[in-house]
Image (cartoon, rainbow, N blue to C red; front, side, top):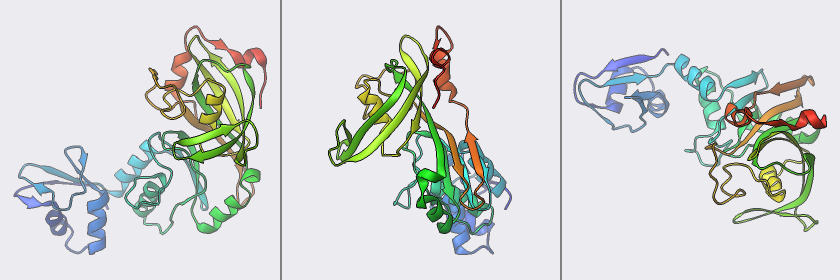
Length: 302
């Protein structure tokens, strides 16, 4: 299906225009067009009885436009017959039990539909809504189960970059605690209280008089683990409404956490797949002037 631009000639409801434009299409196809493909005055419209007036232009997106939109907002950095890896933008849920929520999984399913594919996306691991970065998605339940079978052995390097308030002391180290959840978030305990053991290795790469650019490698993958552990060090992430400072006058207007590295063994071919993204520019721009390169001084790596 190619993109169409239709100039409205007479007052008409949107669904009537769709039926008139695609008289031979099934009801399911017409509903899919209404739900995902209509743009009017730069706004995406899904209201089936949206009133159209003469002079309006209705854009019905074709498959090529939808693919470009996906690639622009959520780039696919790796794809093969069995799985794919996307660079998730901040503000997008990984998955949700609610059908109407916009998530990585729902957007990928639209992408597959645009390619006339019967594939469906299956979540393997998650990133917080406001965390950006590399996210691995399976194309079948069988591949998802294979990945989940021994996640820790399959994913042999998973690293994040973050901006913290002030620089952790010492500049590199390990945070270990037991995490439990309550209605307000995740609580950390330095001793075993029956919670889940969480281990984060961190390394300060750069710092200035206000912030630090810190790399984290996860030995365990608990909910909110990095955010909680940086709070434990009294150097929370910028723009973290739950585990950060109350008065967060951050120059970054998003949670300062990005999953930049994902190295894993392919569940089918068993080959090593090593993927990385650049650090977000809004993070690194804070350290262009009067910055100390800590990692060069200590020459310490994970």
